[in-house]
Image 1: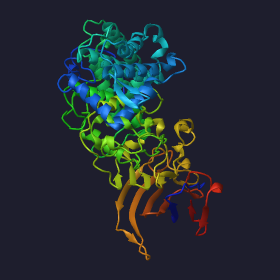
Image 2: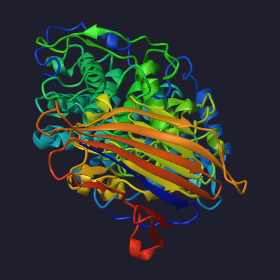
Image 3: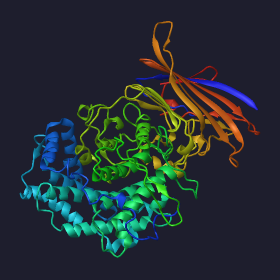
Image 4: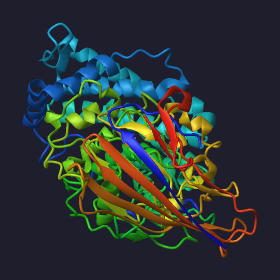
Length: 639
């Protein structure tokens, strides 16, 4: 056994760009046993997502939102996005692979029609459209209706819904169809406008579409069985449709066409994915419970799944008369049998403490610009996750303080894209129909959340993330990397990435996920060429603010400590510990320079030659920057 200890001193020039240092069990209810057992998962009648009876039941509500859009600068900018850059977007062709984009066009046309507003590119103002019945106004309804009437199902059943990738596209498509229908339905029912023609035919097409998606997903190895972000996306779309058409379906011969069956699948697979996991293949739940948590597949897959989950949860609660996703008024805890051979599933309330802990864990992992860390299969796109705004509670958004007080808003267009495929989902309309009830409550400068799997320091000019994954945080399936103890550092006025995770490299990062999933690709310690395994996890972690450090010249530094204890285990047996590492970061944060001392205390039980390598990936090339080795090559300064 050998005990090794060494340090690396990194001096960060905060205003400069730096360069590199090389260094569910069985699917649900396939054997249905009759109707009527799951009706508590549906409202007594269908409700639209946007404006239902009570708080959203009169034209004064629409007038309120119209006034907000016309008078508030940020709302005007969002509406400009919708009118010029979303609705007027052109696509090469509306072929079958592009239909999810066509469905988005239907949603936005219906939204413009319902709101009765246009953006004038000459005056650069949002202005009213003519009243209902005027051809200028009706063209938007006509365009939305044309797309809805053209929903194809019969001739494409064999391949259009088959396969998990197609099913997630169909889920995005279905949600867009539902919201387009909702906006048109609202214009008719709330404003007493009669221009929603072919309503019955459209409703039948959307319900048939939902059935085809549900039936295809409810097969072995398909979406429901994935127990990951795709399970959540498809379940959310099917569940949203169940709420819309809760009072439909009676008399249909196929029992799986009944909305209560869709609701049953939606609630069950969401619960399975997030809180129970798959017993058969060691895929655990994606969340840790009873503490601040994170999503096991990483930041990107959380945002990718939640773009659909938020719509479903909001629809579900509005239909049940619950206004807020954050007030804890729904106790959850309903039980049912997912299938004849399965144990009971207990639902989790969508505004439970566990969900609130998830939002808190996500938000406090972000840097001060609202960008997430590049953990596991997560890259860092130049966007924040704006759809969280539709929660209506600014405690849980990366948009700080009041929405209309946002600065540097002009380049935030991508923030409102659904994560992943551009044009599959867009959230400007959803956000514009949200009334924010609170201000952001502030982010602490340093946090340590063992169940969330990280320790983070987040200041205006410095961001440090130490990966401390534990428990269910290593259950991310093939998205999981061997990156426990990985370090990520961003610094400067613009928080430019300095010490980066290899998966950082932009939207095309997914192409290299199979090349960088090993611990040897991350900012970790290698022992005989091998770093942490994806199943290795932190034993413990902490992060704290210490007393300020004052240098002899009188300059003051804020002093933080981040630490994680990590075990590397024998690859063939999780019984024999191979290496134990204590990684400690001492951070001295100043107004211009910040100092980070990285100390790794290593206890190595390996019987081989015991080579120890310190890996650190920088943002650039040594030859292109100012790079200095010092202290017998044990530390470096670069800028």
